[in-house]
Length: 74
Image 1 (cartoon, rainbow, N blue to C red):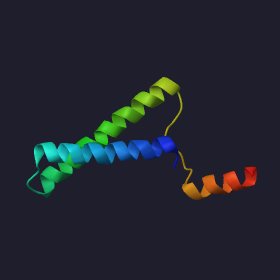
Image 2 (cartoon, rainbow, N blue to C red; image 1 turned 180 degrees about the vertical axis):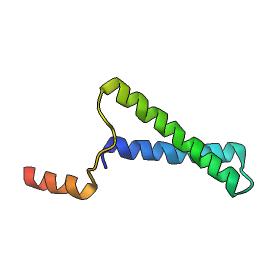
Image 3 (cartoon, rainbow, N blue to C red; image 1 turned 90 degrees about the horizontal axis):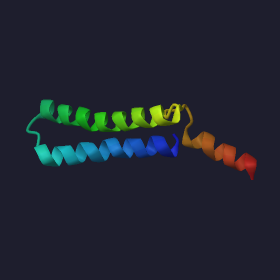
């Protein structure tokens, strides 16, 4: 996971928390809607970034691969 992927994940989680606090969902169905809305905030940010850079944000890279690459460089 790249830094950008991590940040977008954090944006989704924080957006969901903030929307939940603002709307105070009463049941699972409402909570599910809030989670979808929070995820949509990050989705829109990802799509906008991809349109501006022309590059995909989501990668198959994970932390283990990044650490191994850094060890090879050193």
